[in-house]
Image 1 (cartoon, one colour):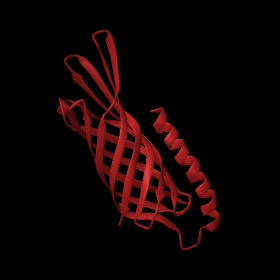
Image 2 (cartoon, one colour; image 1 turned 135 degrees about the vertical axis):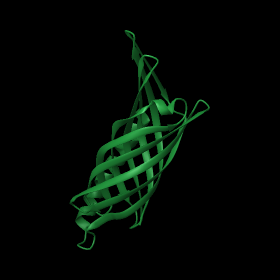
Image 3 (tube, rainbow, N blue to C red; image 1 turned 90 degrees about the vertical axis):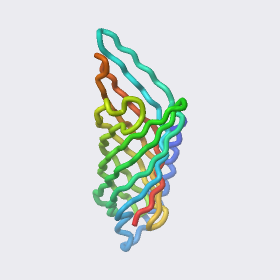
Amino acid sequence: MKKQITLLMALVILSSSAFAQGTTKAKKQDEVSSQGFRVSIVKPMLDSEVKLSGNGASNTYSQTLDQALGLSLGYVSLPVQQLGWTANATYLDIQNNGYTTSLVRIDGNAAYAFTNIISIKGGLNITKLTGGNDAEKFDAGIGFQGGIGIQVTKNFGFDVGYTQMNQIANMDGYEVKVRESGLEIGLNGTF
């Protein structure tokens, strides 16, 4: 987790210097960083925490998940130096200790494009387990995300950010809270 935070901080620092250079070179015609339908391949690096509580007892289990990969469809509107937004529906396939779990996440973000290259975003998500052991017993939970976007060309870019997703269930008299969180990288195509 420390490596992920260090990587995120390094990208923010590099982006800040690019932002400082980009603002002096920004031209009138560069008024939109990105706008349109977006397709993304997302690669989260997640830690999981499961908290069981009930009957006067409470236990917490934490682990780093082996592998996760997803596909996201959405829409983005990022006018330069104005408030913008993004919205996405993402399907994630998570593998850990030989088991596969899938989930669907819907997120909405407020965003701001400093230049036609650099933007930031942050918002809320709703996540529902759709596959795996007892997935049908879990209710969707509210989480959050935030990150920085780099638009490489008019149609292609990438995002780096932090995501937290939550789900909750009541099983056999116990409340089960599941949280997946960590660094997430997205490769975006906007059309």
